[in-house]
Length: 408
Ligand SMILES: *Cc1c(COP(=O)(O)O)cnc(C)c1O
Image 1 (cartoon, rainbow, N blue to C red):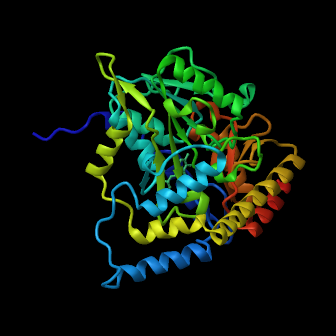
Image 2 (image 1 turned 120 degrees about the vertical axis):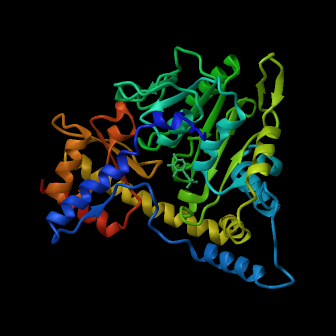
Image 3 (image 1 turned 60 degrees about the horizontal axis):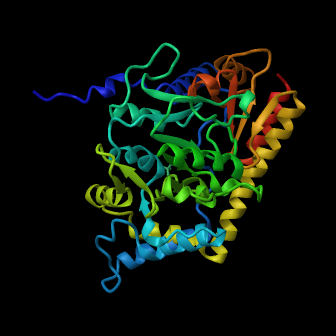
């Protein structure tokens, strides 16, 4: 008799985006003449840049020519890409990460989900609330939790509430975790962590033998020169942190698929007898066993963002999104909203007015302004009363959406 992984039965049905879709479809059906502006989903809107597209084409042409055709590539990623990452993303910031500590993959979503496989199922996981749902759901799938309680928290996960009171920065947990998910710049709140804040976490992890799983998918949106782009800019981090980066939001690769994970040689974890082991060989083993590499043209396209021209183009696209965020912040503030994020991140985190719940505010915006955003409560109980606007949109739509908000 085939039996299922019953941990999947504990998961809440994918609720947030399907429910948004349902309400939007219903509204559109009842109001076919209304033009709906979508500022809800965390997906980019601008195309790949010319330098990236050119490299992508060249990669395809090489694959179609006998002399340059390539079969399976190295599972860990082509050296030309890993060297470019090490040099531009790390060495340029004074961080010594070598190409052989970098694992190229088809996405950070997969990596942040798969990483738990190399850690024992008795590890305690700490996550922020609100949070990118992948960390919690994959923790449930891996059998580390009980059921979801009525407050929206899974038994067995350590939640770290992030709210206005703590500046949307998690506090050190009172119960000791083994693995800690952190994401800065944050999705959904747009918050960033200073060097001092990250130092607190690194010191805590060293002291308690924890590992920090650091999601830096939005690193490219950091505008403040004092904010670290990598957790490895913090002294001691290489012995306690894994870093996840993605070309998705950095360079518009959400549909192209390329990301990477960094596991430093120094990073250690323990077996049940308390003996120390290097973590990198475990991930290497997993990656080479279960993954056969990202396609050559895609890696070639990704490497193009590290050329002078490519970097300039990619930065222009990021600046375009950040200008959207600036416009939103300014308009929302002028309408009396309390606004967070959006300066070093593509997400603007807005407090609803008059005590509306996140979903009440969603319905108000949809019905009165025909604008779609994301209810904060969908990211966790502490997101209740907040709303996420995404800066991934066309400027005209941002301006139009803000104008419509003025009228409600
Ligand atoms: C978009 C996003 C990613 C990137 O995922 P990919 O699979 O690389 O597209 C990772 N983490 C967070 C928090 C994100 O919002």
